[in-house]
Image 1 (tube, one colour):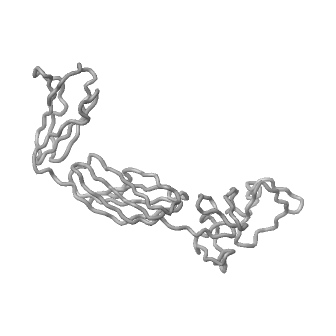
Image 2 (tube, one colour; image 1 turned 90 degrees about the vertical axis):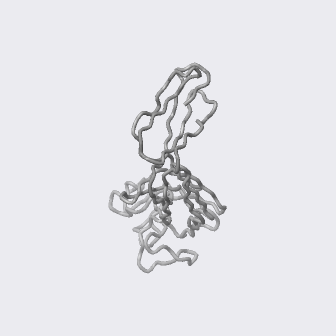
Image 3 (cartoon, helix red, strand yellow; image 1 turned 180 degrees about the vertical axis):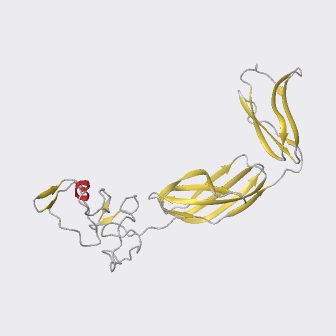
Length: 265
C-alpha cells in the first residue's frame, strides 16, 4: 500500500501497513513520524460499524478529539458538524451525548457529609472527582467514584466525607472523560454545625471482636477523658485524655489484648 503526503483533514491512519515514499519503506508509524511527517497521527484499531468509516462511539477510542483542525473543513462524511477546535481523527465525527447531571445534593449528618448525585446519560465517563474547600483554602480532591462509561440509562452515585470538623464547606464534582477532558459541576455550600449537647454514642459494631468505634459530641471546648472499664470497675484502657475543641469525634477501641466479656466506658 503506497501513501503520498497527507493533504486532507482525515489524517494518516495505519493498520500494520507499509508506507513507501520513493524507494524508502516505512514499516511503522513511528518510523514515518521520525521524518517529521504526520506527527499528530496515531495507530489504533477502533470498532467500525456499518457503513464503512463509521466508528462505534459507545466504545472509547483515541481518535476522539485528537485531530488537528483545518480551515474550511467543518463537516464529516455525513455532513454533520465537526468540533472546530478538537475534531476527531477520521472521516466520521462522533456525536457524543454528554454526561448530563440531573441532581447534586449535599447533606450534613453529624461529623459526616453525605454527597448524592445522579445522571440522565453518560458518554465516555471515567468518573467523578469529589472536591472540597473551606473559605480560606483552594479546592482539593477528597475522593473519586468510577463512572459508567457510556450509558443512556439514569445512574445514581453517593460518597460520604468522614470525620469532618465544624465549619462551612463547599463541594463540587469534577466529571472526567477517558481522554482526560473534564467539566465542573456547580458548587454546593453546607455548614457542619456544633452539637447542642454532650453526647456519648453507643459503640459500633456491637457486639464486637476485636475492634469497635465510640463516637461523642462536644458543644463547647474542653478537656476530655474517655476510659474503658471491665465489669469489676477496673480501668483497662484510656482512649482519650486531651483538650478537644467543640465538635464531633470518633475513637477506635481495640480489645485484642483483653478477655472476652462486658466492658463499660
